[in-house]
Image (tube, rainbow, N blue to C red; front, top):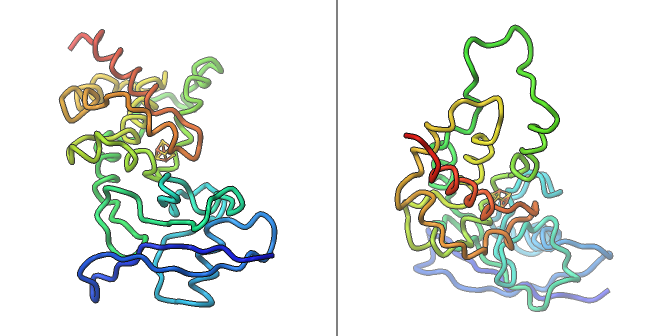
Length: 234
Ligand code: SF4
C-alpha cells in the first residue's frame, strides 16, 4: 500500500548538543493508519531509541500531543492519509525538551493545579448529592471535556512570550468551575488571574481553538472570565 516518509526531530541530551531531524520510511499496511501507528512501527521495527509518549490510543488521555506538519494534534487520532508528505513531527513548541518528542509538562501542570481544579462546595455539605439543574449542568458542556493535552497552550504566542502566563488550558479549566452552580470559589479563582500574567495576557489570537483536539474553545472561556472580572465586586 506504499510508504510515507516521517521526518522526526531527534534529541538525546546525553549525546546531542542540539536537536536534529531524522527520516524514516513507514509502511502503510492498512487503511486508516494514524500517525501514532507510524511512530510505533518505527520504534518497534526500526529504531528502539525513538522516544515519545502514548497511552490510550483513542484521543482520551492526551499524552501523544505532537506538532505534526506545523499543527499541534494528537498522534493517535491524526490520519496519515490526511497529511502532506513528508510528515514532519516535532515536540510541542515552547515546552522544555526532554528527549526526542517528549517535553517537560511540569510547568503546564503546575498552572492547572494553581487554579484549584476541584469543586469548592457550599457549606454545610448536603447529606446526599449536591444537586444541579439540567440547565446548569449544560453550562459545563464544552469545558469539562479538556484532557490536558497542552496542545492549546503550546500553540499560543502569548504563552511562548510570557513564561508566567497561565495559558488557555488553565484558564478554560478555571472557567469550568466558575460557571459551576455547585461551586462557591469563583471570587478566589478570579483573583488569581486578574493580572498581566493571567487572563489579560490573552490577545485573542485564536490558535488555541484550532489546536484543540476535543473541539473546545478556550478563547470563549477566557472571554467569559474577562467579563466576570469586569463585573466582580472585590
Ligand atoms: S483545551 Fe483542548 S487543547 Fe487545551 S489542554 Fe484541553 S483538550 Fe488539550
